[in-house]
Length: 348
Ligand code: UD1
Ligand code: UDP
Image (cartoon, rainbow, N blue to C red):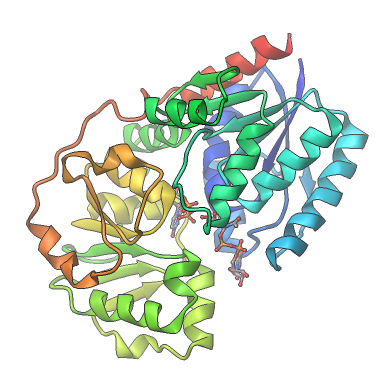
């Protein structure tokens, strides 16, 4: 079996890795390296324990830092693991600093790179993720894309070879949870709106964060807010107090199955998360995305997802919409199997 090193480090990557680990059994010798970008119990361990995933083979424990320091430390450590282990290929997910660090090491050591969730673009280069994903795509040998739009995004940048449309790997796990009825019932009475926010442009600046919280506090239904540690830390340092927003119930970051439960039982989602825009779509929940653009443009069709950025007071007007959803968005939920088979073909 060929040896592939998967780089993971942030919450959504642990989740994306779960179906891939299942699909790789007896087909690929899949080793996992956890950079330590996310490290709190409920941002990291909970996912491995809850989903029954293998412990990572390599734990770098890099932790938080400025982008330069964090990414540089990851590069040094990932390179040293690669020099020792000599993997036949490297696999990275999405667009975080852990993704970029893996991509840089693989390109310097001439290890073929496989990018899951390739071809996404927000066309907003002030987002660190946009730079990370462009750079990663440009050094990848295999690019696993979810849609026609991602294919044309890559074509515009001259990337044509190695592109495989497999759908979205997060659909694999959402279907797995739905079919096996694994979503945990939330400890809160419906109706409620579910919310998550963690993008720097929404949570790092006091006036912006305050105006979003003020608007959520005015909504006609209570808001259950799963608070990312970045957002919690910012509220503390910016002196924004939970008690000033009585319509918002702040909860700790949830395990995946609890989060699914909150999403399955909510009336609608308000978020700036990439992954949760898709999850809301597949679970047929209206999504309101607090961003000026999205990479997941297909979710905007039929009012399933709506962008709101400057005029936050319009959020409540969107409750009147009657969205509809297509069952086939981003594939059939078998991306992981297609990814593993394509990697095997490539390496043999
Ligand atoms: C990162 C990714 C983002 C992704 C998000 C998923 C980059 C540039 N950003 O953003 O694309 O959407 O993860 O959640 O890679 N912190 C803790 N405990 C933790 C992790 C973080 O307290 O376990 C706090 C620290 O104060 C840290 C801050 O959160 O400085 C931000 O963490 P970081 O990983 O740098 O960025 P995210 O905002 O989580
Ligand atoms: N998620 C979770 N618990 C939470 C909030 C989110 O398990 O309290 C999951 C969510 O279901 C999705 C992923 O985390 O699969 C999304 O991660 P996040 O929003 O942190 O990052 P993004 O997708 O924006 O990169």
